[in-house]
Amino acid sequence: MKQMIIEGQNILTGKIDIGGAKNSAVALIPASILAKGKSIITNVPNISDRDALIDILKILNCEVTLNDDELIIDTTNLKNSLIAEKYSSRLRASYYFMGALLGKEKHVEIYIPGGCNIGSRPIDIHLDGFKALGARVTIEENKYILDADELIGTDINLRFASVGATINLMFASVYAKGTTVIHNAAKEAEIINIADFLINMGANITGAGTDTITIKGIENRELKGATIKVLPDRIEAGTYIILGALIGDNLTINNIDPTTIKALTDKLTQMGSKFTIKDNSLTISKSPNLKAIDIQTAVYPGFPTDIGQPMSVLLTQSHGTSVFEETIWENRMGHVPSLNKMGANITVNNMTATIKGPTPLKGCEVIATDLRGGASLVIAGLIAEGKTIITDVEHILRGYENIDKKLQQVGAKITIKEI
Ligand code: EPZ
Picture 1 (tube, rainbow, N blue to C red):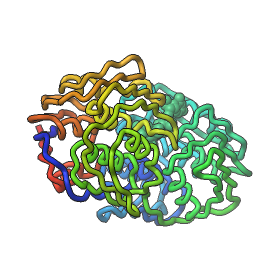
Picture 2: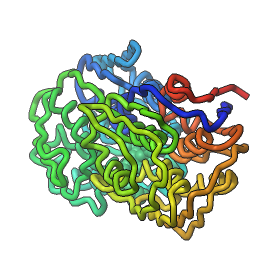
Picture 3: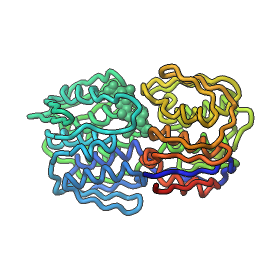
């Protein structure tokens, strides 16, 4: 098990380079099996979710080569095999192999996905979409078996604009007979990145990034291996931007796409935070007297749920009472007890947190409960007086590449050690 040790209150200055988006990379890697041959994915983040997916590709007899942030995947000798629970349960995104293997092979056997403990995380929207395309779904204890004699394109109306279901149904329909239209599709920036990869392979997809995505099934030919670059991680960027608003001195966050973090930057402006955006960089410094503000998370382009927990730390230092309402996940307040233990004043009622500030924070021992909750504890430790020890940091390393090194480079006193 790994622990993070942080000495707080060091002003952070300099540059942080943002990596490729976890929530795109974890779909692009499974997508590679939709094509026959060699695909190259660049700007892949150095995170443990990447390694978990590479292990699954190897079970499927794919040849995988990782050169720094470039992943080369050769699916020529793909062998459709059972994806055992010890692999599928390591992350939520293992379920993208459902759509990819169903789409490519019309058969998949995979155990239940894992992922952060932020809610019940059902996959009914995915399964209903697969059935609409003609798949039979059998659930044996924790194992899903999906198969189809043939997949027929159809209209699919998502009851919720699910990111995962949108992506999985794109995968399942690229080879279907006829046209599939996904209505109420998720519009996250990552969806466009993933659709571009499939289009580069030869798929016929239009509308990615809007709420209606049309996939025309390709007849009698195979998708060919292609190249794609993972887009910048807007959640990693948002996490470090929030840190800059708390304890930065001209902290520059590089390799961002400012259009994908507008919901955050708009809120920061309303709170009185001062920052500048130039091309694909944002420079921010600690702003005194930040104003409390109300926030409600929403599907893209609303305020991202994944930035909510880091944002709650900024609200503990803002002047006044903020009301933070989480609307996507029913259990995304796991970090609150640790923040209150450090001196925050947060009361939670179901999915709403009332945050009174500013409250000075004091370092202490805390436990990461999930990826973004863990990131919020890193932020809290970096602004707290004294030492903070965070246990279970594996949660954090799933989604923040080289977080210790990136922070050390801008002046943070942070180390990770095995215990
Ligand atoms: C993706 O999860 C992200 N994960 C999440 O980021 C992110 O919070 C979420 O999208 C929303 O933006 C990855 O991309 C790997 P959803 P996903 O399907 O696809 C309900 C992080 O921190 N739902 O959009 O699983 C679900 O319970 C992670 O990086 C169903 O009810 O999210 C939730 O309430 C955490 N049935 C809501 O929809 C379904 O079949 C959003 O889920 C699917 C979802």
